[in-house]
Structure formats: C-alpha cells, structure tokens
Image (cartoon, rainbow, N blue to C red):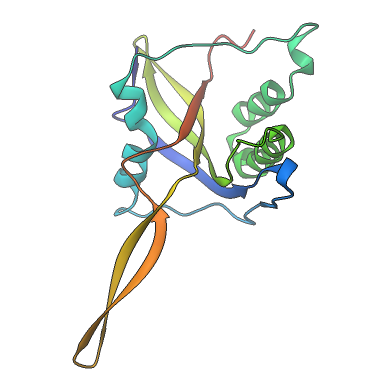
Length: 175
C-alpha cells in the first residue's frame, strides 16, 4: 500500500508528445516547470488521485537478456542516482514514449515527468518518478472585463479531475 499524502514534488517537467506514425511532433520544454503554492495541491491531486481511488497493480522492469538493456529502467536509475538530472532525463523519457507511439489510436498530449520525494510505501519513505499524460482537452469559458462589458472567450484545456494515464516508478528493489 502506498501513501502519497505527505509527498513533495521536487521537480516537474512538462513536454508535449504527438503520435509519431501520424507525423505529429514532439515538444520538449527547455526548463523545469516551477510550481507555486496555489498550483501545488491541485497538481498533486491531479497526479495522485487515481492511485488512491483504485487498487494498484505493481509491476517491475524486466528484460529478456538483462535489465541493463531496458532503456526506461536505465533512465530511471540515472534519475534516482542524481535527482538533479530529472529534467534532462525526462526529455529522454518523453522521446522514448514518442518513439513507441506508432499505433494510430495513441493520442497526442502533455507528458509530465515528476520527481517525488517522501512516498510512504510499506511504512518506508522512498522517492519515486511519476510519468503522467493528459490527452483529452475540454472546452471552457474564460471571462474578461473590457470597460463596462464582460466578454466570454471559448478556450480548451485539461480537466484537473481526470488524468488520462499515469505510472509511478519507485526507488525500491533496484535489483
């Protein structure tokens, strides 16, 4: 069982990944995204809600020959060895996902790579890497005051109540 209540997101990178087979592009952010006090609880709820509401399944990295040949395992290990590399390695994760996006039903969207400190798992505090993706955009109205008139503008954005995909990689059982 995992407890994400007292976790801290120490690094967050946001990128956009398209479907490679459809010729859609990839966009890699130059720098990390700086969370503020207002946004942090909303982002944590957005990322972690799905892990509280469902029974989680735990998987582990495998490779037919050796884990040393598993690209995502290697990237995660590099991040855990030096959390300051989360952003640069997050770009590698995003490129890896893009290279795997060959099925025509895979949707484009934003990819979030987070370094998460203080996850409580089996009564032990560990760090984790979160890989999350939002794909579905929803319409919403944004209002603006101009002189004595209120104007409505139709915009699209991500619903913070529903994350489309997500996984956590825990820094445990490295072998």
